[in-house]
Image (cartoon, rainbow, N blue to C red; front, side, top):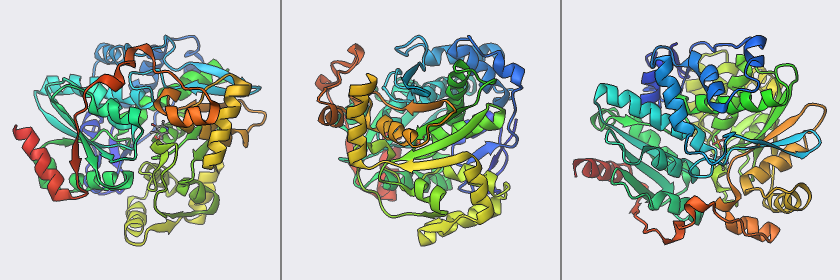
Length: 462
Ligand SMILES: *Cc1c(COP(=O)(O)O)cnc(C)c1O
């Protein structure tokens, strides 16, 4: 299995190389050269299997010869052992034909754990074999950072630096990053917003001498291995509602387009998904792009669903690559326009193909709060604000096909908004109840590439 860049001019890589690299050297993102498919029989055979078994069967064709079957199955079982629910990704019913996929039973209470815990185990297995050290730098709008630190803490072969926008993550999110005690984890609070953090991360990857010197590795949602891990719960949930014999649709609270892109891959593999609904908050570039055809940035307005406060959705490039017939040069040009002019227009042909599968909707702050209140009263579910955005938008797309909305975080991660909306203060699960008493460790940094690179080199030398 080979991986190619969406901008067409970086070398093809194996699964393991693409995983350790993250961003391609031409600035593009790695995607499989071909998407393996599963037959109706293969999918039907997933019914009744454990999450881990489904994970093995769905992901195995993508990893090539990176790991033996036995190694890979060990990696998967270690990755999900720390989850607080036997089903890993349980499905609950909200209303007739509307279901909620709870993706918040991992160690940091957001769906990011599904990918990050797996990637931690994959890196460990791979680096132990090669005896190498890597420096992971990640940018987070809140949940990726803690998930990464939790997954990599204490591993000899890895240092993890996480950039988060100072003052723009919830207190629980911040503490989940700043209270990790292991010396190989470094929380950096950057003056700016998430796009600034992501911009600095990309600049570091594009500085090839820095990249090679510190052996930079990326675990942001641009990392292919993360997308792959997220494909699994589309299969597990769809199969439990009757796939492949019944179609399902999904609504996904979306920021960087990683989670919903995994749904797109599931469909390409053969899972009968009728529609994938992109749900955005007031930062609605994707909703505007899918409904109007113009992908234009406008600046981020902070919201009560901060993990979706994004104006440039990195993984959107991956689906554009497909709807532009995998022409890397065309994608490179669109991305130049994005950088130079703050946006681009999607061609009519590409837009039509996007709309064959994707729909979209936007949810305002008021609607987010109202949906939390209503779900608590009428559906017996306490939703986090991100999941609330999803449920609100999903309701505009309910029909004859079962709808599965992804619940991306636990309500206790965003207690202020949830309490304001519902009057209920969601408690943290037992295993985290001392979070507010643990000492914090964080470094303030400016939005400046040279300054950051110096800091990282200094910490690695220490
Ligand atoms: C990361 C995140 C999202 C957005 O997911 P993307 O893959 O970036 O689209 C939504 N909700 C929560 C709680 C998240 O942490």
